[in-house]
Image (cartoon, rainbow, N blue to C red; front, side, top):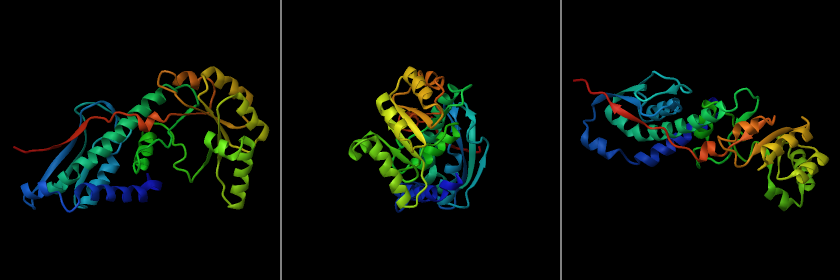
Amino acid sequence: MSNDLPAIIKLIKQAIAEDIGDGDHTSLATIPADTTGKAQLLVKEEGILAGTAIAELVFKTIDPLLAIKRFIDDGTYIYPGDIAFEIQGSAIAILSGERLALNFMQRMSGIATQTHAMTKSLEGHPTRLLDTRKTTPNMRPFEKLAVRIGGGYNHRFGLFDMILIKNNHIDFAGGIKQAIVSTQKYLEQNNKKLQIEIEVRNFDELQQVLDTGGVNRIMLDNFTPEAISKAVELIDSRYETEASGGITMESLRAYAETGVDFISVGALTHNIKSLDMSLRAVINK
């Protein structure tokens, strides 16, 4: 998380400002200012835990004096009834950060759980599972972190850290060769060293890329597993290969068996179910 930390802290501060505004008036109105207490993060659904470090940052940003004790690490398989962590200190601060911390953790744990389930289908094959840019606006650092916690890998973070020439780029550029040549010139002129990936939709486009060269990876978009196998054989390890488009949990292993290097699945981040959990006050009687 270290590389993402500045962006994560900035986004957490924005999220706190969005939620709290000029104050958590319900807590301020009902609870004496000096009241202290304790609460526990209760797991209500099994899956992969993710986001405890983010929740800690949320609470510490609201009140640096809050003490958090973790019982379960991110990446651990959890079950209903598990206690992920305990937080102690100002009751108002705990309640002010409750929903925001849960929002992050529930979504991140849902992503990590789905990623974990899909990576299990790849066991025995070197193929790596990638996410995509199909993320919630302003949630990308958190969602991509959750993918890594679940055992997956991140594709490019944004439009700035990798060249990905897709069909619209090719159409506007006037063709595959023109798009590749223009990209190489652009990178040279701007002194940028970025990996180049290009998307192909059929074997004719694949052959054009092979004839032109000058890329690092070829994305095989909406190919069947049988077609991927043929394409991987034609590429013959000259370039990295990536399968993408309409790949599901049920078809994932068939794609991995083709020998493709990467499989990208947008559903890892844009089509997930949040994991159920809650923050419960601990009342000593």
